[in-house]
Length: 74
Image (cartoon, rainbow, N blue to C red; front, side, top):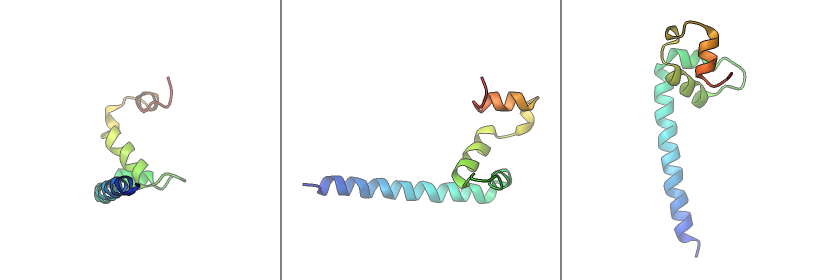
């Protein structure tokens, strides 16, 4: 009765594991993401996401523009 659900969960777990490996590979090459992880409670996944989302910080003319882009302020 639960076999289909267990199979499905196995597939999902494989996809999560594969995604985690990809994120770690990106993180190892991304010096900005590594620097971001020095902030307390910021782990690899969030640091990599933020770093790839921002891309080049120099494209923002001010800190407030960056914060607004990141959705931290209205």
